[in-house]
Image (cartoon, rainbow, N blue to C red):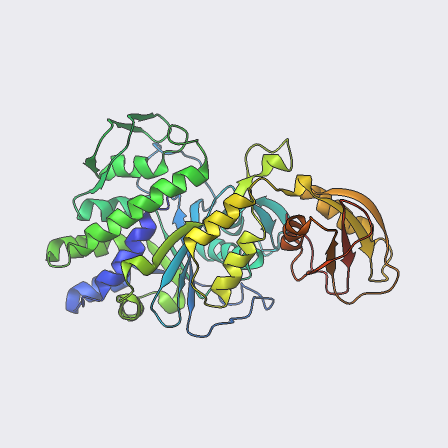
Length: 437
């Protein structure tokens, strides 16, 4: 339910208008806090840009108050959408990155309610929220989601926010709906949505259905839905800002927002939101960028997997590195680079794996990881000399192939070379940290 994030951003801006007295205390008391103390572990990414903020926002599939209309029988916390909001240290720009819920990533070890820890494994990224949130524990859900996003992006997450269906509906209703312009009529039974083509203002259940609809619109993918949701987000934010001089609309909007909001303890309150609002309210619209992490269907690497997507490297790594270093992302350039290399996937990359660590069997282990990620491993063996550094060597004409491989092997150095025509040489060094699947 990505569209609620516009409400998050808009509500933060609206909070800057000032809230006092009874209203302040009521709204302040609405916000729940997730206790993350001791749950995130010590092995976290370093904060490379003091002053910048990375906020993980979750659209929760909580059905509280919804009856059985959107499903029943849920015992875990359900996440419908994950996003990372990066706010620059100079507060002159911000980037919102959508992480498709079908992203195939590594879920790291997470604490569970019964005191046990889960094992690292690969799955859809939205499993992390459910895994940590067994029996409805939002703190555990938040912690596992943060650990998973940090593990796969290298970004240090500073804050957490989550909102459910009811909160989203309330925010849209408070601003008297949002205009959308579907090019074709919509009849989506799963999203409980029936709409005519053409521009119209929607709210309530229809607005919720519009942002949840998937299979009846576009190509039916989660990434296609994200694009539609981002447009809705922008419209909701603009509509909310237009209501700044309407006290009732302002209160209703903030009531809906805060009543369905859970944050980390540091951000749990109207005052922290107000302080954040003051720091970002001057960001111009043309420097607030919404984008989706570059990705493609995993089926291209693993023919049997028709349900997931994998992040496209090196573009995904370049995106997250830019944000970690607080460098503004050029959306058009990123998308153009991703489109240019879209035809090249791991299934088209041939690799020879050499063990430079001195640990027996290392080449075979890494070869198995590479095959799981879709690469063609043609040979394995031992390097002529030990190596501290993991390297990727490529023959003439295979630089793009090397970028695909090095993007899946964090920290690997890349250089021209290699001895086998048409084959990359991956030498495993002591610094090897695994293969991104």
